[in-house]
Image 1 (tube, helix red, strand yellow):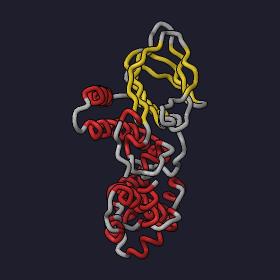
Image 2 (cartoon, helix red, strand yellow):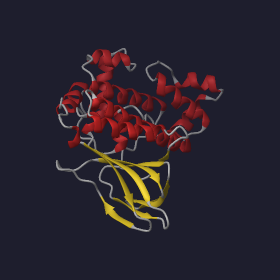
Image 3 (cartoon, helix red, strand yellow):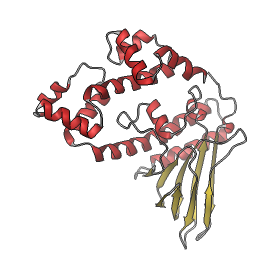
Image 4 (cartoon, one colour):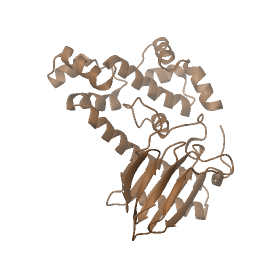
Length: 290
């Protein structure tokens, strides 16, 4: 495990004001140790067009957005309004310094069990959200600023928690919104159930009876909307959750298997290798030592 000795090496926080009508060229943020991986921006005042990769979208007060790994971005500030933003750039080790190198925000979400549906772990350019009336996201930003300034004992962990709070709030919005687009109500009900009870021995026929839908029709509908069979999805959901446990604890593999729904640890190992290409033990070793 790598212990953070100087959080400033992995995270930078600052407030920036860009003049009205100006253009901020496409750029990425670098640090003295070879480059930050990710960026989060909160719009305090003003409005602009944000350019991320090949995407363009409007941003205004109360919006916040994530800039994914390796994505160049810039701004075209609206006339008549300065753009005042909080800019938070961080290396993945500021969040999970014991993991292997994380190369997309959706991969980071997967490791924390936020996106059990989305199979695409590619780099994205559309992470745009709006803070609620309670301004909880803004408060999390300000709390990070206070912790970094005061540097009281335990500030590393407090900053990590606040950073994860911002990320998780955005991830929940992003993956829920994108999943709702592709899922009909019956399939959404099944996915939501498996999100919480994937370890149970619940068959698709059980869902069919509860939803009053014929099993053949429900099976076909699940495959069409999710892109895999119910059984394939269930195994992948269980294996994904076990990856998180293996990466963050020293729980015996037999206990991990039972926790995620496999009474037979041999079957768990077979399924793990099928989906991950390595054994659970090899995966744990790679995640901890990388």
